[in-house]
Image (cartoon, rainbow, N blue to C red; front, side, top):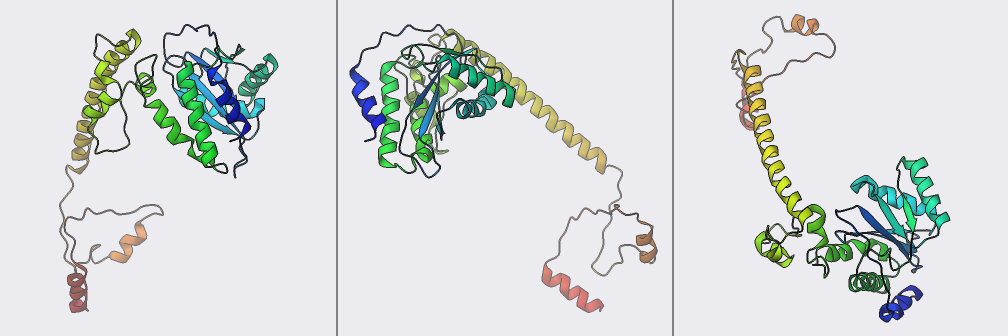
Length: 296
């Protein structure tokens, strides 16, 4: 067991008095934490950057080669390009570290993001039980695959994101995307939804934000379906108009497509022009070749 995992095991029973941060929507306030050093992998990664959403408890984990502001800024930029920036990020790093990260984000990736230094108990973003479960899972992967633990973080994150949180009573995935998830197209979504906490997700018991998002999403879904149907009908009409008025021609295998003056017709075609035909019947290769032999 590495030194970091031993410290995490030792700190399980240490009581922390956290001051809760008020949040009202997903990705509004984030917590940033850096774990390591772990055994160096084949990709030279030694640390893990954890970014946690205070509202949904959604967690992003990015392997790091170095525990420096530039590496952290690069990892944050990758996350922000997928989810956008937040109003604030709490971290236990120093003010100088936070300022350097913000400067790199602004200068290199044109991202404006505030980082605020805070007590470690305030910047975790997870309740103690969830935080310990996540850290323990990561440490287990590190101990089992010390040279390639960085390639096995996604399954750990998926299990965490699809497990019902003890505080919110919902999965982070549901609160983040307002839908349920599975890894098999053959799974019964109704049954799988109940396992992810949908049994308590009736309209009356949903958090105000989630209920509003769900109502809005249902309305938007109907509009999108209507727009797609309209676009499909418009496309069909456009295809019909293009085909309208075109003569229907039928050719046999031995017919001269360009007529008697084939050479002169081909010479008139400018560079870049082409002639297209719609083929309704395709002859089998054997029949086509036999027809060519007869004409020759």
